[in-house]
Length: 101
Image (cartoon, rainbow, N blue to C red; front, side):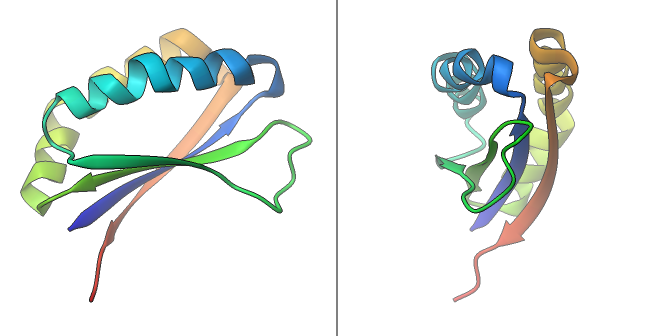
């Protein structure tokens, strides 16, 4: 199992609208690709929020092939949508993690 983790810093002035968009538009669209089986949206605590809160979106993929397919086929489209919707008011970076038992 793989976790595609996207850490996102959100400007205070867009926070409420962005959070609604994440729940109602963005996350459902990502899940609709069929490449992820589950997700978690987490808010980081004990971090500097003077510029706005920080979140982590964790998307769970059954295989590296599912993750790779998402990156190749879908990621650019979702990145463009985010940029068009929020511009520089949100910044993000991503990491891939593997669950080790």
